[in-house]
Length: 293
Image (cartoon, rainbow, N blue to C red):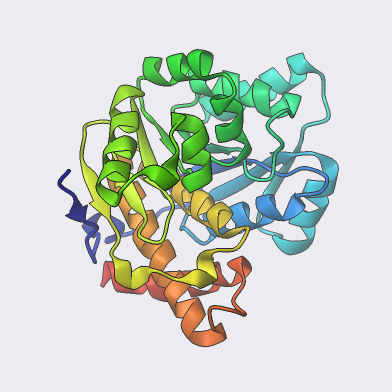
């Protein structure tokens, strides 16, 4: 199956409005984290804050919000300790704000808040990114959730790694050639009306229209093969989608390029052994300069 290389430059990122304000540049809502995985929300929200997004809000339980409060003073906090009716009311207010929403990093797939948010957002959120726990929850109830995916007016963006895509597709990814993998990811995106950012050593974007893009083998980086790297990518996708929701395919490509480039810059400074996922966003400023310049 034919693929196109993800470009080096993205014109849509140029010309940021100097007269804009925080509401001009969109709101990203991060629904992430749990008692023993608070860092996922910190990584995703920090990445969204580095994306140029005007406002970043984290909707989670108290220990996660404590971690966000300590590490990201620019993020807004929304506790999720209310009743189901109150949770739906809060989710409804987020959806009506028409920003972008991320669901799943650091959340167990059996978390009732995740299931409630996933169900509501698939039906109502205009710009939606699904990662980690949300993908596993979907894979456990494919018929129901894939039906909601297909019914969406605006396609959701899914960001699975190889193992998550194996669960989503039901395929043994170890048995597939590279060409077969490309086809499987593309077929999934087309049949389920979504855009897929497939995370691997040569990350790819597959669109609901059947287009396929790859980043290039020179960006292969074992330093990214650490828990948390995907949370950084998901947060970046969400932050850019909050600003450029009308062009989700370009958002996916730009996010993969910026994340991969920042990862390479982090490896150059810290080494692939020692670099951490939290180092990646440190290099977003230079990565953005390169893709805009």
